[in-house]
Image 1 (cartoon, rainbow, N blue to C red):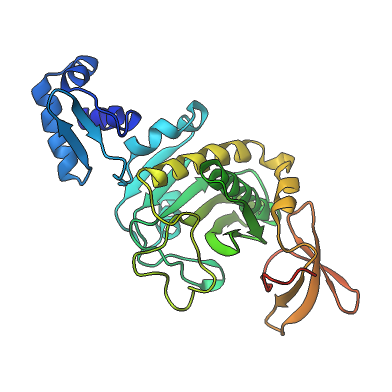
Image 2 (image 1 turned 45 degrees about the vertical axis):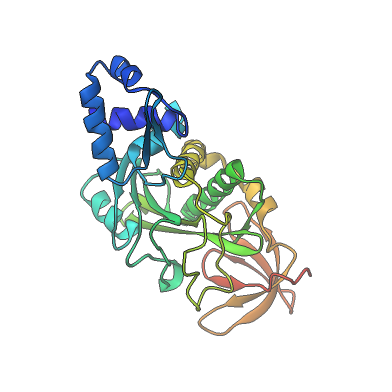
Length: 328
C-alpha cells in the first residue's frame, strides 16, 4: 500500500477516534510531515478528516467514500486471499464492464465496484436505478465448474449471502422473491443479475458474472415514479462507512457460499426466506399470463408452481408477480 492508503487504513480502523500524527508517524516509520501530506491528499480526495490540536486526526463518522482501504478492514482473511478489488467512480454497468474483463482472462474473484452506474442492468432487459452515494453496485467474477443447467444455483446462493449480509448490519429481516430480488419491509432493496459465458463444446460455464445492486438508503430526490411503489432501502440514511461494510459482508458471505456451491446446503435457507411459497402468483409468459400457486423450490432452485387445473410446472426462468398482501 502507498503511504496515503496506509494512513487511511489506520484512520478507518479508528474511525471517529483521534490518533496523533506522532503515533501514525512512528507506526508507519515516516515523518510527521509525510503524515500531514498524506492527510491533505486524502482530504483533497473528499475524505472528511478532522484535526484537533494535541489530539491528532480522526476520520469522520459521516465520511462515506468507497475505497479498497475502507473495505479491507471488514474482510476476513480467507476472503482477502480470494479477491481483487477494482473500485471506480462511474461505469455504464458493472456487469457489462466485468464481462469484458473476464473475456480478457481475469481470474476468479475479480470484484468491480462503482459509486454509480449510468446504464445499470436488471433482469428481462430492465434498467437498474443506480444513483451516486446511496447504494452499492458491484459485480463478482466466478469461474465455477458447472453446467448452464446448474447456473441458477449461483443466483440462489448469492441471494442468501446478500440477505445474511444485510441482517448482519441491521435488525430487519431480509426475504427473497424468486429468483433474484431481496425485500425488506415489503420493498425491494436488492436485485441480482447473473450473466454467463458457455463453452458450447463441453456445455460448461467459462465464467459467470454476478451483479449485485443494493439500495442502502433512499436517494435525496426519492426513487423514480416508475419504481417508487416497489423500491425501498433498509436504512433511512447512509451512515458513514455502511457501504464499505456491506460490500465486505457480502464478499465474506459469498466466499463461503461459493466454496460450498455444489453442496446446495443454502437451498433450505433460501426456501425459508422465500415469501412466494404458499401464495397465489401470476406466471408471466410470452404466451400469456397464468394464475398459479407457488408450492416449493426444488433442488435445482426452480420454482414449483401448481396451476388451477392441478398441473405442476418447475420454472427455471421467467417472471412471476405477487401481491404482497396476499397470504393464500
